[in-house]
Length: 153
Image (cartoon, rainbow, N blue to C red; front, side, top):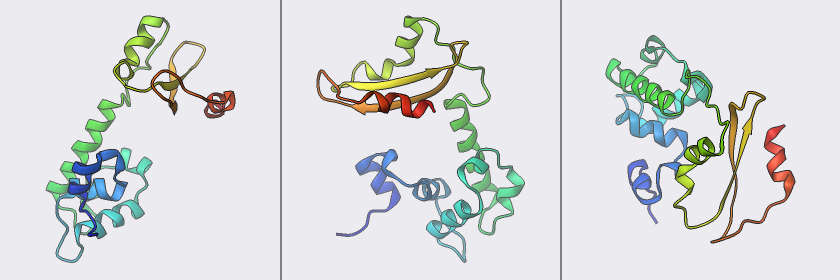
């Protein structure tokens, strides 16, 4: 069986089934004269880990051989969009009522299987961490309490 290219893999299996190098390769689109797009994306990820990429500057991207200003601006835009989507640099989400929790977890309402999601809050009811603990069957989910408490440590 032939190996699927990242775009084909995304179409067939969804974006969550791609590695960071494959996602980055899709954003880059093409490589350079010396590096194909896969080698370029792997080189970037070897040079900068994901936390470093969150705060990378345009000049740092352009300094990488094979990254043009156009590619760098595309990456910067994708990074900024992801920050905005996930609320980085925004005020904390306060979940101090059942209605707010229900609104926050709206995406699970239409799921065909039970999903156990743990919301870890601080003393001010601000969301610190959210974790999908388990996906069960139609009307139940079987877990051990340690699975809920382990991510809290």
